[in-house]
Length: 150
Image (cartoon, rainbow, N blue to C red; front, side, top):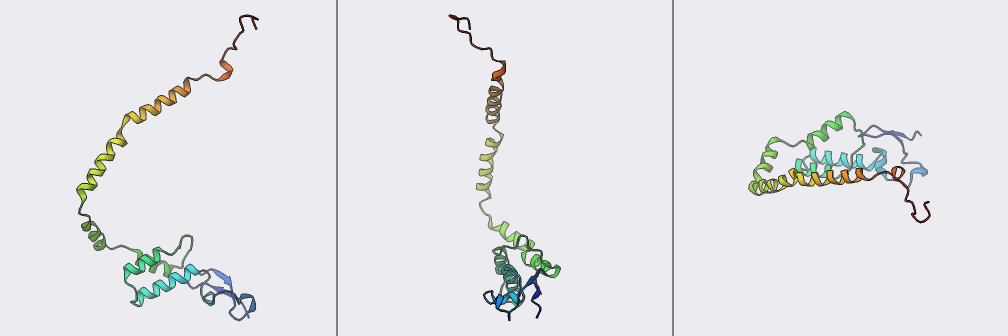
């Protein structure tokens, strides 16, 4: 029996046989998925499209799965993008929830002088000039002992 398989989500080829002793200690979900992350993404998307999860819940669950570096097939990519996409209504809701914009602006105004403070940069330039003024050892004249003239 062939033990070559292709992951349902990312189409990566891998070896697994649910009937072979060599694979007895591995989980049974390996019959369909090569990585646990692929299995988790499948379960989240299935839950979302079957109505068990709202878009917000599915998005939160997807963000908690480490899918960096996994190249999903095009259909799965499209579904993930759909779940992760934030609507303009949601953005407006978040924007409307920010009621303390004056406090935020005050914080920004307090940061700006620090960022624009030329004295900080002047001191750094001064330090650089001091380092440059130190002469290398090769240009320094040797000290002569006046008693021995050496």
